[in-house]
Length: 381
Image 1 (cartoon, rainbow, N blue to C red):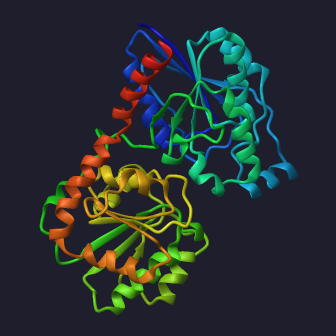
Image 2 (cartoon, rainbow, N blue to C red; image 1 turned 90 degrees about the horizontal axis):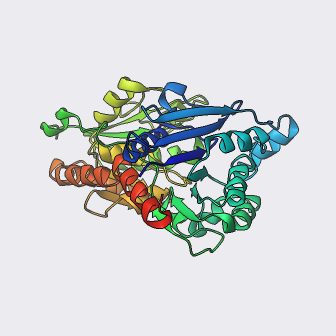
Image 3 (spheres, rainbow, N blue to C red; image 1 turned 120 degrees about the horizontal axis):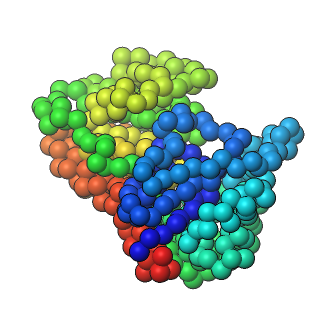
């Protein structure tokens, strides 16, 4: 069966690219996947790491009005995905009509993507919506986001859950749902051979991401300081990410952890992969993350996981005492105790194997194949 699938989205990120490329591969060479992006949307990532490529993938850049000035500042303050800065576009409607898709996959309910949902309903073709938002994490979003999802969610024929919370949409509709969490491709992200060696003398914890308050950097360093105060010194911690406000440097000095904690700064490509894979365990103390895709990358690399309960990935990826631990980052004593457990190689070794299994199970290419089958079974596409 040949199919034409349209993805309408403003979002560009490496974890989107991984799933989109794998999904296009699952369609087969005679089917096509076309992505429709707004031409003037902001993208914080390197384009080469976010735009999917493949023999049956094409991209269209759609002219769409963008809200600027005071309105943009207000929307940024509310951090809203539901309203955003890109407005509906007639050009998108025309481009979809020219492409004649068999199914439309819209990412989130923004005004820009809403035009594609309405196009699908007008032309009586299936439309599925991928989203981070659901019943259990609704408190993390402004009221306008919750209202927007509840209102327009009734138009979706299916939901692609990008987080565990999204399995129960705010609309309350009983429609087909499939999990396709933000993920890396485990075929491309593999454990370092050095991890098989004996490195029991010093345990390296790694954190990957921006060094900002919402990521709980202060909570992580407070737990690290407690670990040091307990007499444990055979460890180090590596922060791989930008520290533009010097938050990390200031806190490292405050907790007197200069001999243990090192900030590498921003890394990407092979440099990031090398730094990341050099760790013995991964840790994130975030105060709020709808998912935290970096946890899946760590799992693919075979790193034991210490993950904040406030990250959606904790529910999806962490198997308690098997591949790591879910922690309350505010509970410094328990947090430090979990770090201490990871100092023993005999604890980490079986967890590494379990983490890798988890990374493979949720790999983008595995979920893409399941997503393709779901579309066939649910919508005969």
